[in-house]
Amino acid sequence: MKHYSLVLMLLVIIIGTHAQVTTQARSFRSDDFLFADEVIHSDSVGITNDLIRVRHERKNAHRAMFYSMILPGAGQFYADRSSFTTYIFPILEVGLIAGIIYYNNKGNEITRDFERFANGETISGNDYDNVWDGYTGPRYNRSYQTAVHNVMIGLFASDIYDSEFFRLDSGNTQHFYEDIGKYNKYVFGWVDWYYQFAADATGTFVLNQDVYNAAWIWSYNPLQPQNRRWLGNIPIATYNPADPGVNYVNPGHPSATPMRSKYIQMRYNAEDNYSMARMLAFGVALNHISSGLDAVLLVNKHNRRYLASSEFSMHYYASLQNDQLTPMLGFNWKF
Image 1 (tube, rainbow, N blue to C red):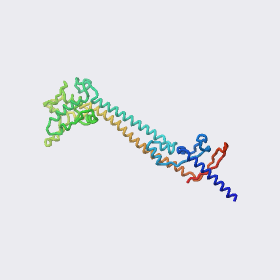
Image 2: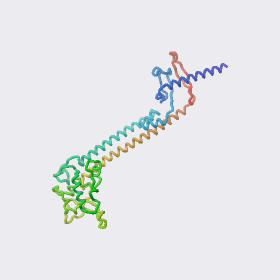
Image 3: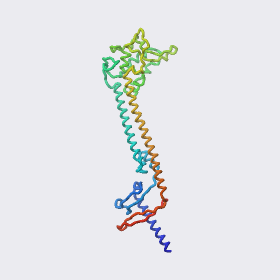
Image 4: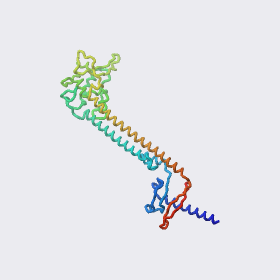
């Protein structure tokens, strides 16, 4: 009978001790339970007299994924702050965002440069080959484009070249800057093309004279005159009305207008930088996804360690009772 009484008293003490530990543990903030083997001093928290406590909490995979999808590395910090990836994903995020900012700014800078190159500054003709020495103005001159394509429209009644074919924006829009580099039909405005194929040595516009009609070179099928296509022009300096020949220059060839060739290269450089920025933006999205998945893996690893621990365990710890350090024995049962 005495044995049963002692066992019963021991169970009451154990259950009471465990209940006290559980009640005290719940009074802490959840952040305090993230990591095991923490040391807590009773005078710093004012809640418990225990000097040493071992903690381990099961983590939530959905929460970890959400944290890392919003801020890469946050889910890893929640799951296991000692993990290498806790710091890798934020570093990658900062690097990718910095790259996006850099390449976007670089693209914007080059865009401003090629816009200024086209019609944002005044040049002097004597500084350029194939440009009349007396010319001053922008590299791309809208009035030159209009003068030449009007001549082209009036050459043949049956072809695709009419006022609807030439619809260059009158303002400095994005379409304007794209079109003058992209389409050969707007090559006439580049001054080094104009003074090579539309004006004589004095800078006089001569392409509107009938004698220079043969300076235009066409592909032509008499049975299908509507399919007439412009191939290029003969330079005015070498043009002979009596024998025009076929030594023409295609408008897309770099020698037709070196200014346009340089302009196109500048646009390519800007687009390369914007493309890199877009690629890095994709990398940011991938970093968020990868970080979320890695956080789930860390939580699963953490929880496997949690489940692998014994369901019934015994803990030794110290407690202050009446200002005296007293060794204590506690039992923990997970269910």
